[in-house]
Amino acid sequence: MKVEAVELRTLSMPLVSSFRGALGAETERELLVVRVIGPESEGWGECSALGSPLYSPEYVAGALAVVRDHLVPRLAAHAPEPTADQVAAALSPVKGHRMAKAALEMALLDAELRARGQSLASYLGATRASVPSGVAVGIAGSTAELLDTVARYREEGYLRVKLKIRPGWDVEPVRAVRERFGDLPLQVDANGSYSLADAAHLARLDAFELLLVEQPLPEDDLAGHAELARRLKTPICLDEPITSARAAADAISRGACRVVNLKAGRMGGYLEARRAHDTCTALGVPAWCGGMLETGLARAANLALAALPGFTLPGDISASGRYWHQDLTEPFVLGPDGHLPVPAGPGLGTAPLPEVLAQVTTSVTLLRWGS
Ligand code: MG
Image (cartoon, rainbow, N blue to C red; front, side, top):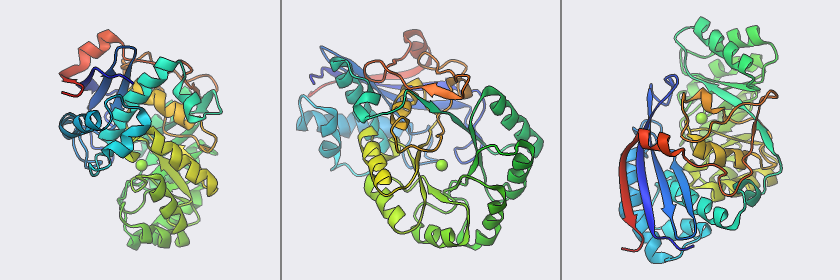
């Protein structure tokens, strides 16, 4: 498509509640959004990097710099009228920075699909009009507080709950939730905070009929996960190491996981996420869509992705109200059946509300295409 300019905005949005656990204790979500502007169409992309490099090496200021100084100039030189499916190859000489690449690809994809009147869901091959909604619950101050939080989310209609765990906050809180909420679909995420020496302790979680235990060991320990998988009944799911379809196939073939959490930002974009979905489906491994404290932009794209047939478990795609008093877009509201609707309009099917965008913007950088 013809591109005239790329606008990079950093935003600061107040979160409803601080998200304690592995993502730190942020009360403001710093983020980067990318807007591709052309004569016939424009599109929006959201970078999933957080304000600080505490969850992944990427962070907002770094992502802004790499998009501005490396990704946009390189793409403009390689493809003066780029299409979204050229982005990954054109940017492959730049190592890493997948979340930044994903944001640029997402903006181009949105613009392209808007121009031709097709929804992202239809483009990706979605087969459902709504997806079941799950919620992630951070480390609580006490078991009583945790039970209150889970009770509130149950009342709101969430169909599956994920508890963050770490050494010192695992078996007892999980037991308390299981005892109080009976057959609630439940899973846990350790964000890599254990070691293989904790295998016997982690095996105590087998008593609670969890759907899965996510990322118990550090992200570079596939062999450890494969060994741990032999000692646990609960399926192991990997998150952080799944950086591509090939990484998913590798982890599965080594026996390091039986379930995969797919996050488009971590994989460099929704096109690679779709390939990873296809890989998981071909290998008979269930996938689900993870979350990164998204605004409505990436929430819309995640809903389109999660509507693909291989996403057989509820993901971490919650309603806007889980994170924001005021989302960047029209809010996503949970239906009475605990599902969120998959946007059907062209592209993402949503866009920032101008007055909200103006309010939360902390910087604007406008790059002329090809100059
Ligand atoms: Mg995770």
